[in-house]
Image (cartoon, rainbow, N blue to C red):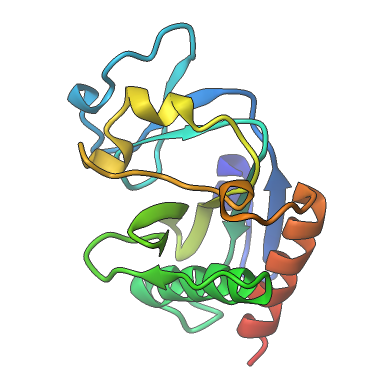
Length: 183
């Protein structure tokens, strides 16, 4: 995604990359190692995205958003809001009421974080993206200060009584993102 962003021209199509990672902690550009408490055998990768520490693993939907934000006439805050609203709307379709917080990007259900956003903008283009917790082992989050907050709890769809295949969740969220962009 870094190479695609670096090499892309204004003619290149925007892309959404859907991935599921092996267990890994990532630390954003300004991330502080003090937020990594007891990572054990899980690798820690320094990332060039925004944000602090997070965890990615099987059962979590990750979508990289490779967008030309200048062409889309979006600023960074508008892109973050678009991604938050897309997750919120997708969750609503599954019967879950979620919210965003202006001071702590991401999506929350009853105060627990279910969706995260970490972006990088280069040459007026975004990369990295969002993660949405579906049906995963949440214990690794206990070994970091998630997003730099010592008391932030996380949740996932399966803990909220929703059982959905991650591929189906990806299809729904991608559809919501693309329909929002086309408005």
